[in-house]
Amino acid sequence: MDHIVIGAGPAGVVAVEQLRKHDPNGGIVLIGDEPEPPYSRMAIPYYLVKRIDEAGTHLRKDPGHYGALGIEVLRDRVSSIDTANQEIMLDAGSSRRYDRLLIAAGASPITPPISGVDLPGVYNCWTLEDARSIIKLMEPGNSVVLVGAGFIGCIILEALAASGVKLTVVETENRMVPRMMNDVSGGMIKDWCSNKGVNVLTSTRVNAIEAAHPLLVRFDNGEEVAADLVITATGVAPNTAFLEGSGIDVDAGIVVNEFLETSVPNVYAAGDCARGKDFSTGGYSVQAIQPTAVEHGMLTARNMVHGHSQGNRGQVNMNVLDTLGLISSSFGMWMGVDGGDSVERIDRDRFRYVNLQFEDDRIVGASALGMTDHVGVLRGMIQSKTRLGDWKEKLQDDPTRVMEAYLANTQVLG
Image (cartoon, rainbow, N blue to C red):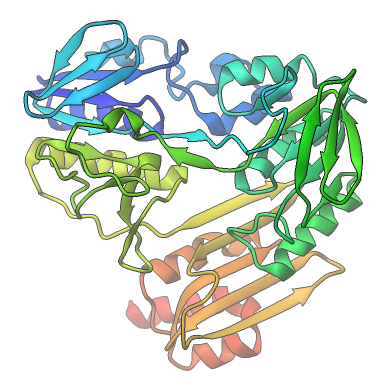
């Protein structure tokens, strides 16, 4: 059987490894459209501050890893897919046939509608090529404007702050990481960053970037900042344009069933481009996070080889973020559910926060600051749908007793 995997990120790499495990003799091709070996975008900030070299970003450190598994790594871009003939077309002009196809093409940065966003000195921080350009402008004392304080933006923020630049962060929402933290905790992260010397502007938009020496960034509040470097981190969108005319259904991501198979037989999708099942809601949506990509890669490989042998029970939406030493996390339905109960505990002076969301006597969502010991426990209780019984009331009185609740219910189940 011949397998082709489009996309050399975490989902694609895990998938080809698992394909080899389940199909020792099949043909396996991994296609990536960048010149480097498969690498982790999440490692780029460590490369920016020189904690690792470029090789340190590679998903597999052994250069002979893929060859030893009999996996062909092809550096090219897929231009289109002919699903009727089970064939992909490449930019280089050649084509390849497949028996099973996995689309793990990932996502690309959204370019914000800002005048001057295409000027020299304005970059996304998405590829190693971007990182090479950014490093040249990250000299200590240089002025840098980071547009976007979401999850990806805050990872980049960490590296920029460590480099000693004069940093301004601009976020249109009223708080930092608005898609994983509420007003209280997102505001506390802003205060933490401000205390560390980062200029954070929330509820603020960039109106224009002007060519000057250095660049001039104008905000909608009338202020302006001179910048040697501007980085945009305003979200990503699934890579699906090349699927036009393929017959594969796309709706804010590639539509898949519980086995991660698309609307076309023998074609699967995984990772940041796929609308996979959400554990908490039971619905289908894109979860652009690495743990989900890895789980998708493992599951699709099994189903590509063995048929529909394992359904997808869904992934818990989970984010854990380190922002200048302050750990934040959110899980599941962290924003709450209709008719549910909630409790929060705030310690602003110590930058500690916990919020629990309940449905009946189960925790269905949570968010926290400075509570690293509870990360695994919170995820586990949500994923296991643990019934709390009397412990719900105890947690409503003191939500920091999560570990006790977990141990008490584990012992009961045991």
